Image 1 (cartoon, rainbow, N blue to C red):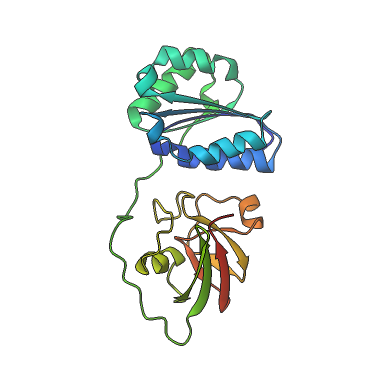
Image 2 (cartoon, rainbow, N blue to C red; image 1 turned 90 degrees about the vertical axis):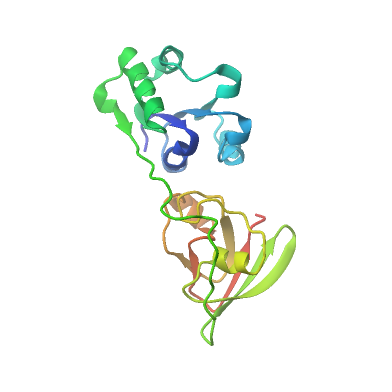
Length: 232
């Protein structure tokens, strides 16, 4: 991950691009140029996390936010002008098909070699993240979770094969989440004591895991008692 990367994303296509950026910045010495297109400021996903990473790596990460509400759709010519200085970078694209076609044409127009361009096809969610939740009875083998959220600590019974987020939502606890499929980090939290395992993880990198981060939508208990914080 010591190479330099040009990452081009629109909308939810930021999810795999952000994972690549974090891997490069945390695990290597390369630089990252991220072009991220959205309808407006309210549509930006992971905005706060991107801002935090920019603060941590000011000399290695450059981010350009393109908002359609302010600048119109990103055209081939506009993107070509922005990307012209990065033709030697390894390049990844992810977003709606028309956007990716325009971005790819812009890259070709500025002479980027075809073998430098990689297309990422981020799959839509397989399930409904807002579907009703049915929690099995915990039984004698259930673990106990102490959870800190918004300055409040609660203790809940945690069935062994049930993700923590499902337990919290079923209890009426307003935990943060988005996809519920391990494909984003909206529900990320910190394991302060005890151990969990994730059923799936498509977004946290090794450095995140080393810090104790886990995804509440995928975390199930390994130890009998676990202490979790959403506020760190």
